[in-house]
Structure formats: structure tokens, C-alpha cells
Image 1 (cartoon, rainbow, N blue to C red):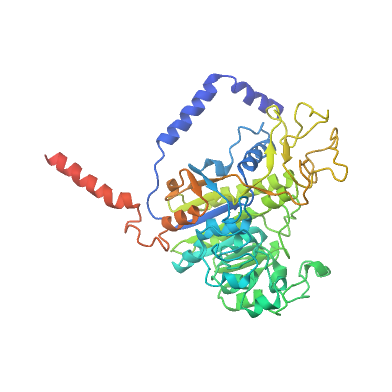
Image 2 (cartoon, rainbow, N blue to C red):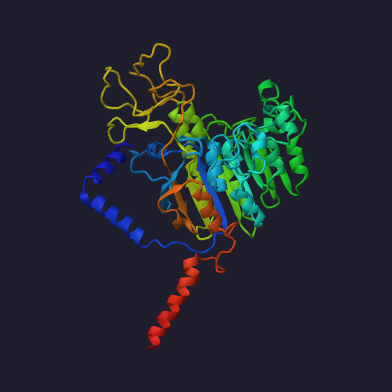
Length: 505
């Protein structure tokens, strides 16, 4: 490995290396032509909490796992030809949450923090205020157009990001009726799990969240002796049974063996809930018990792609966010690597000329990467010099989080500490139990039909509109008959006629 790294670094000392690389990149840019016809399929990959710093650190980590210095590595998502930036604030919040942002990129309307699938006229926590203020998601629009639709996530399927695809709720926390008051229920408000089954007819649902689907006290099939993992519903409904009863060729699975046994050719509907709440971190996942994000993505695409009218699929690497909240960069970046594997697999299973694929994040985190580290330094390693307190510090740090040294507020001396262990918490500047989101813009990466419409700084709500336009979904159903852009459909024939006239003249 060290010889391989040496060869790479030696090659980079020659100016020809960089000149040739730049010329190749320039050549590719000059040959890049927008795909302006209609998209048959839409895939949104959402890296929850995956700010640009997370992408950069994950890039290096991925390269180092493969035996490289890391910095020169290129992730699957970084190969997308079109890149833009998304402004992530909520209507009522400078630094956003995942519910308000989910409403923006899935429904095309910015919303208040903590609310799902409703406009900013709805008040957080006030269930009645959501009535009449519901907004429609791109998933629902795709279903209305006859496409198959799916949700894949490493969180509970009732969580904020996937929830914005199908639910209308004044609070992201109403996972089941157990989290709601009797007054809310009497006013006709429905919990998110109930809406998952009764709102949009979703073809594929894969993730965690079993506990919110079963009557209170129902033992979990995987952890029957754990009272913390039992069903939570007070209304006595078994939502998985209800979901199955209303669909033909439907399967419900809760473990890897059952998941692997699903025949995609004979299965039109699939619900897989592999944990009572969120799925396990990738570092903790038992590969024989739970599928990976990439495996769930593949299963979803194989089922959804049977529809000749195409599909919409939402894929979330949800625990990138959770690792950051825990102040654990190793967990978060490992989740980001698995997310990139899902992006890669999605590209292998679809055709770029018929599928618009968008990779983005809902928000970032107060996650920093610095310290003048040497090339090839472990991404979890130390900066080369000591801080002013004469103690070492890691290149990766948090602006706030559980890594702050309470109660004495004296920064620990991490000399000899394994800062690359799975449980190590990076040090933080401000003490909070859960590290917070960041407020800066996040990246949008896109390929496929109409991907060129991502081209600058955009409001996050713009993302849903581009996807709807690309697939000619409501409100953009009056798209050109040939599926091309308005420019292509109207201007190109005129130019052709002019050229004919010039030739004849």
C-alpha cells in the first residue's frame, strides 16, 4: 500500500500529471450535451446532513479504505455532470430541520421547521392548522401520473425526510397515535404511520419503524423480550396487515432472509421494516439480519422498473445525520460511504438518458475539517502541530456537540487515544447533548434528462419543480409533445426552416 501511495505522490510532482488531468476534464466539459427530452424515471438520493464538509471527508475516507492517500479519490456522486447549491433555510428558521427541508425539496414549497407536507401557514404542533394547508409531493404527483413510487431509508420510514413524501402533519414527531393527544385525534388529525398506509399508494417501502405499525404491547418479532421495542399504537390497528389487505402481489418482510426471498418478478408491492425504529448504523449492522442501503435500493429499482410508465424513488442515507448528532464522525462517514454505494448501484441499474437522478442533502452540520494535515493523513487522525494548550487535536472537529468536556470544561489530552475507533467522539467547542445542524448551502448533483436545469444557487424548493418538469408531472403537464425542452420544441424547428431557406437562396 505504501508503495502505491508513493507512486501516486511521485506522479503528481510532474506538471504533466495536472495538465493532462485538466485537459481531460475540459474535453469532457466541452463534449457535455444536456439531455432535453422527458425523463421516464426520477430518483432522489438524499444524504441527510451531508454537507460539503461531509462529502470531502467521506471522499478521503473512501479512498483510504481502498488503499489510496484519499484526497484524489472520486465518489460515485461526484461524477455527476451538473452541480448547483441549495439554500436550505426554513420559512421560520435560519438553520433548518429535516421536516421543513423535506417539504421543500419534495413538495416544492418552503415550510416551517418541524412540519411535514404543509405550507408555512400551518403552525408547528397545532394539528388543526394543517387542514387546508396541505401541499403535494413529487412522489404523489408521480403516482397520479401512473408511475410506480418507492421510499428507501436507513431511518424509520415515518421519519421527517421520507415522511414529507406522503404525510401532512403539523409535527414531525407524531410517528404514531401514541405521540398525539386525544384532542388532536378527535379533531381528525392522523399520525404519520397511519398516513403512510392510507395516503399515497406507495409500491415499495423499505427501512425501519415497525413499532409504529402495531398495537401497543405487541412483541417485536426480532426482539420479543424487549419492552422498549413493542408496538406503540393506541388505536389497536395493525397497519402492516391493513396495507397488505388492500394490495395484490404484496409482501411484508422484516429480516434479511425474507428480503432475499422476495421475487421481484412476482412482487408488485413490498414493505420491509427491519428494525422497531431506525435501522442500525452500518458499522453495527449484522449483514445476515438486515439489508444494506445499496441492497434495498436495488430491490426497489427492480420492482419499480417493471412499470412501463416509469417510477419515482426516494432513497435516504438518514443516519449520516444521526452520526453527526452523536458527535461521531466515524459513524457518519461510514454511513456516507454506504450512501455512495447506493448511488453507484442506482446508476448501474438505470439508463442515464431516461432517468433524472438527483443527489442532495437537506442540510449540513457544524462539522469541520482542518488543521494543516499532511497528504494521506488518516481522515480520523491528528493535526501535525499542537494547539495553544499544548495538546494534540484531530483534523475533524465539531462546533458543538457531546464531545465538549463536561463538567470541568478542560479539553482532554488525546495523545495515544485511538481517534479512529468506532466509538470515538470528536471534540466540540460548545456543550450540547446533540450536535446541531448547520445553516450553509448544500450541494445538488444531477444527471439525466433536464439535469442541466440545476445550474447555480437555488432555493431548496426548486428541486421538486425541476423533477416535476423533467417527467412532465403536474403542474408541468403541458410539456412539449416530443418530451424535449420548450426551447428544443419551438426554436429548433424555426432554426431548421431558416437553414433550409438559406440553403435554397
